[in-house]
Length: 233
Image 1 (tube, rainbow, N blue to C red):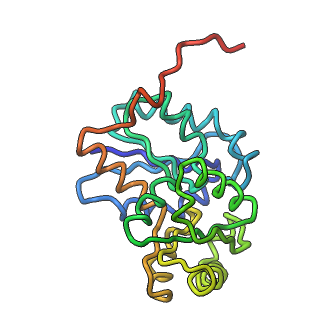
Image 2 (cartoon, rainbow, N blue to C red; image 1 turned 180 degrees about the vertical axis):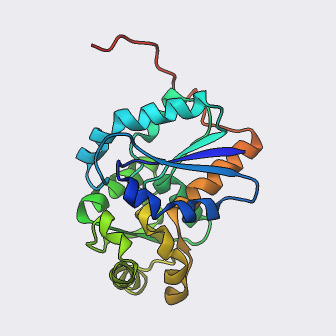
């Protein structure tokens, strides 16, 4: 099985810090190809960033299907261009946010998301409402750590830990979802500190992609209609 993980930013330096975690998430025998975008913003933190990245996410997803991959994951908890990619391709498409929310709901009755910035928290709240998951959400918090600063793992972990503890003690969260795939290297350490399940969105997305491909399933084209060829001027 071959899965392509699309980290939807143009920072090859940041992507290099994430490759080992993505490969570790997959089963033995699954080939995981981790790529960033050829152009676009260096991080996804605002809806504006999502819009700038969208054409390049779609381009990489199209090539992924053409090259015979079994699934593609959009490696971001804000789920940029998720619907558009599903309209464009027929192979399974997963993403960090939606996948991790689905996993969290299998682990507890209420979950909280701890993300990087206020801007990402707002997008994630909108997505949770769109997906119909709000009745299972205790809170969406942010650690005020920009995406590219997550490479300072010790400092980032402490900031995330503060918000996660508040989510558990004050908001009633039983599960914590990390609201940025760049937090992936911190997931196990945070789970040990918190004593509740901590969902790594990158791993959740890869595992769901593997499961769908193994079962021969992909998104319904009755839900995600394939667009016709159209002239672009």
